[in-house]
Image (cartoon, rainbow, N blue to C red):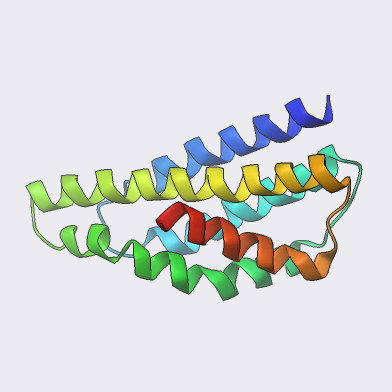
Length: 136
């Protein structure tokens, strides 16, 4: 049941992230993605019987978001072009947000499944690794 609950949290967050990222306003999605991904990580921890502070998760995501935003720069720049650029930017950013959220969530699940526990000091490295995989 732990695995299924954690996977449901990942998929729910990925859908929400994709929807938020289709906003036509350039760079508006980053601020909203952090709470979505924070909630997902807290739910994954909870699924495995552990707790984690929202402040810790939010701090880690804020520290690593610059990398993700930089990688999705093309989609945000496209949004500045009225019409087709707005649509293309929304599609690009939506895809990036879904993949990134899925990678972070699935990487955490893999760690819990393999180790049964995630040391809080390792969470930032896991998130950075997921971002690297998503964009490589």
